[in-house]
Amino acid sequence: MKSLVNTKRLRSHYTVLVFAFLASLLSGCATIEGVGEDIESAGEAVEDAAEDAS
Picture 1: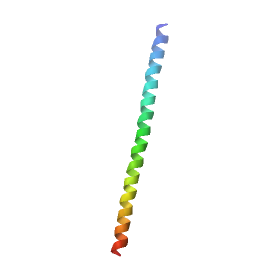
Picture 2 (picture 1 turned 135 degrees about the vertical axis):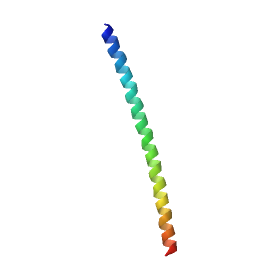
Picture 3 (picture 1 turned 135 degrees about the horizontal axis):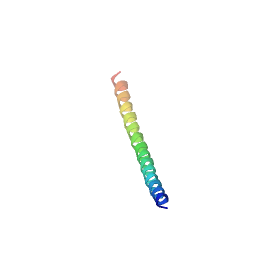
Picture 4 (picture 1 turned 180 degrees about the vertical axis):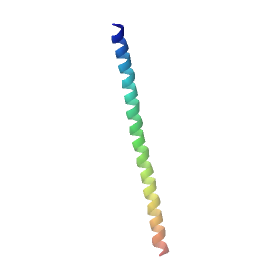
């Protein structure tokens, strides 16, 4: 019976770790999207400056 309790406790710890990992992945996706938008806007600014210079 004691091993069954330990197994359930271990399973709950793994579940918490999996959810924490998934949450960090989701927040990472939002961060990467923001960086992509910043890079895109910087590229557009360089493109506009190049068009004005020519």
